[in-house]
Length: 451
Ligand SMILES: *Cc1c(COP(=O)(O)O)cnc(C)c1O
Ligand SMILES: [Zn+2]
Picture 1 (cartoon, protein in one colour):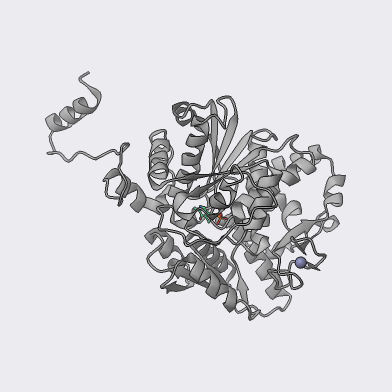
Picture 2 (tube, rainbow, N blue to C red; picture 1 turned 90 degrees about the horizontal axis):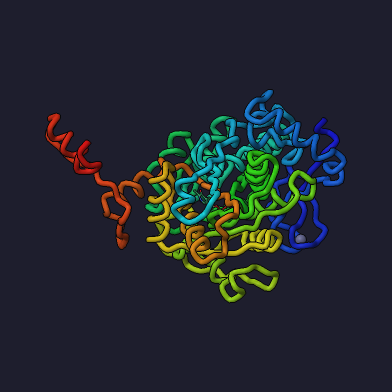
């Protein structure tokens, strides 16, 4: 069945360059534009929407292998011609879409859902894209292409995903990390998976520059999200959200943005869903940035925070932020994100350090366990709900990008009120007691009153 569909790289800046998905190429050799994966959309459109829905629903979290993966269950829309034996899957995607009514009520909305993209093998949405990229590398190597190793610059989660998928496939991996700027949990993942872990005395943008130069020799394959294979996997998050909402779009989708690959991917997914008739309208998009790393917000501020083709994203030096995975000043996928924002009538919002920390704590009080980047998305959502941009009755989906357990230091710091410059109005402090019934009863009474 796969053979009736096909996909290839094409230049996303409008020239007519094309290449196969197993060619080692990341940018258009003619005009320098980023590439994107294009599909034979006429072939996809020949199958009725109802048949696609039935096919995807029948595979969802079930199988047969590898179709139970959230990504490979949509293989025809992702990488149709990949040989099944080259799929490197860790059963990514298929994560919960949670309805968070207590949190929604607290921020003045009726219906908020959280797509838990961090509930996955390495604890972040990066698995969605990495399964596609590493599978492509396996296919290239099977065809005789020399690839000594796959390399990435990372703010932590990309390196964790790359090293896990490469370890599963027996492919060497190299990760370049900004020294001292990622969490312990993130650092220990590539170490455990046997990657060559290189800590550089610079920031993410500095690591990115080195890895781009490194990958000019074609036997080191570049795994950063400028590589559009990753976008193809990440766009399945949108397909799943629509599927989990009974094949409909929410009114809004809110997502944190750093390098801006994921926002682009989510936009691309909804555009394809609409084009192929699986949903009848597009959601509006909110890209949320940390105020300390806000080049997209700055670029669109003059345009009423809306994106148009006239917007140019100037690189900045990102400041240290609790949302360490989005401490990026020169986003590689800025142009892609601007296109997604234009297609989804989007806006850009930002959250301060205090706002992201409080929003994360507020959501946790309602049962979640959010990473600081999800805190940025929630902080932005709270502002947009408060100023009436997002209306009470509108249905909102927030993309949670990583598991909170990867950021335990952030959590502990908040509740102990030791995060520099941050107050903790929502902190919860443990009570240290003598081991007696009376002391425990007194503590219960102090918190909840006498029975
Ligand atoms: C990578 C990452 C992001 C940002 O995604 P981009 O595609 O770089 O915009 C946000 N949150 C977490 C947890 C991440 O790992
Ligand atoms: Zn081009």
